[in-house]
Amino acid sequence: MKIKTAAFEVSAPDLRSCPKWALPEFALIGRSNVGKSSLLNLLTERRELAKVSDTPGKTKLINFFVINGAWSLVDLPGYGYAEVGRQRRLEFNEAVANFLSGRRNLRCVFVLIDSRLPPQPIDLEFLRWLEGVGVPFALIFTKTDKQSASQGQTNIDAFIQATREWRAERPDVLAISSKTGAGRTDILNYISSVLARHNRTSG
Ligand SMILES: Nc1nc2c(ncn2[C@@H]2O[C@H](COP(=O)(O)OP(=O)(O)OP(=O)(O)O)[C@@H](O)[C@H]2O)c(=O)[nH]1
Ligand SMILES: [Mg+2]
Image (cartoon, rainbow, N blue to C red; front, side):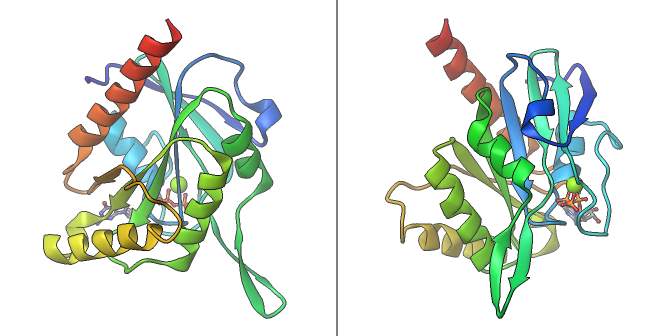
């Protein structure tokens, strides 16, 4: 797929304010700083379409971008932990939860995971929550340029293994370096295949 046009549409503070269109949507979510906005810029080949920062929590709203006038990429705020008493609990904003569970034209959620780390409880917890919502998702392991391919693969394998605790089927897995661009074509092909499937079933 060639990206011919990519344009920012709107930032929504909640589900009600999201655009009322029928465009198929692909959302990017993951821990703060995992590389969601960088990936959006890489996919669209627009360096500054989404704001990238070393400060976690840069993205605070639900940000919609229209690609080729035909589908939408949605950059979501990252999730984190909140301290609740002596416990740490998965925390992401209500708007994001409502969006992920209630948005009808959401075709796929890309869950971004840092390929440098062994499986993190927070990512596994989020994934388990998402699975309960029933929306299709795929995993994208980020920052693959930051360590050897074999170290990255070890972390990816360990993560998939950890999901087997509650999930029989192997999740769809992609990998990306937003620095070198390695993996970009695979992700665009994946999006194309989801769009093609949708066009067949909705026609
Ligand atoms: N080397 C390398 N650095 C990356 C990659 N992806 C992102 N980064 C860096 O990681 C930092 C965070 O990237 P962002 O794209 O802003 O992350 P985010 O997930 O959108 O963060 P929030 O919006 O705060 O949740 C920035 O300094 C990026 O330059 C990558 O693939 N390789
Ligand atoms: Mg961001």
